[in-house]
Length: 323
View 1 (spheres, helix red, strand yellow):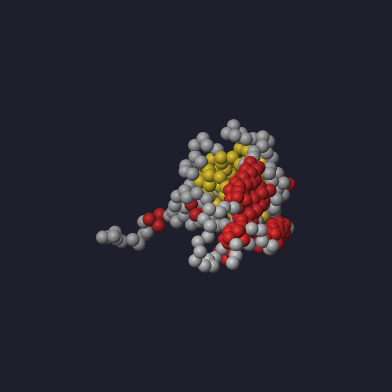
View 2 (cartoon, rainbow, N blue to C red; view 1 turned 120 degrees about the vertical axis):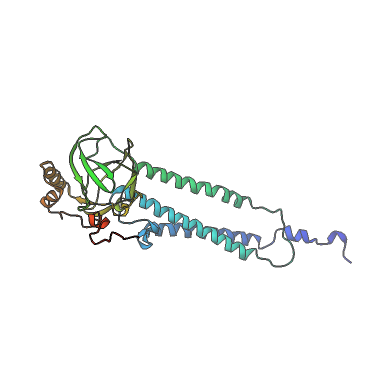
């Protein structure tokens, strides 16, 4: 016979300290430490190589030619890596819980148990992640939209249906004077010539409807508004010489898809020669030839307006056509 006081209650066994409890806790702490070190090593490895190039920029355009475009690109890549890291961690926890706490019998588990560190983690961690992303986004945005009082070059971008005019100005604002101009036509694509290693200010205005000035390699675009609104932005410098296609990125009418231009980036010396030739009365094509550049756009072609008399009233049309 066993005395009542010597009976072993199940609850005492369940809640008492077992010999393997400390070992399991140490193993769990080791797994968490290993996970943290692995994540840190992965981030170091990813930041040490060009992740964007290997994954096609995570959908972000590559080949930027300004410091501002590089900063925006780096912010996008870092955000994608952070999102992937958080996603892998969350999905790992989900699968771990599925396996660790799968059903092993018909007994209902304790319903009032909680894990304070875990609740603290999934409450504070999202706030920290959003705060960090917001901080770096604000820093990059402030840097990208910054303007200066005395940029090296000021260009007035004038959009109209369906072409462009680029005015080289001697100052900023509406009171400045135009010293040279490039005007696009239906037969000739306008070529905007700009120098490397000089700060450039773009002042945009429209003569009719809303357009959008966009060079993909700048990774930056602004709507071109009619009226008194002048959208302004600057790039600290253009880093690579070459020809880059420019487009209108705002649906503006029938020939919106053909409203293209070309950005031609040249050396500062060639730019000064081009501007001098324009001031002396030479055409854009003559000025481009004078600095050894192709006189016409090489990245896009003029569109066929088909605005001829025969398009609307062909000579062989029957008087009874349409009856």
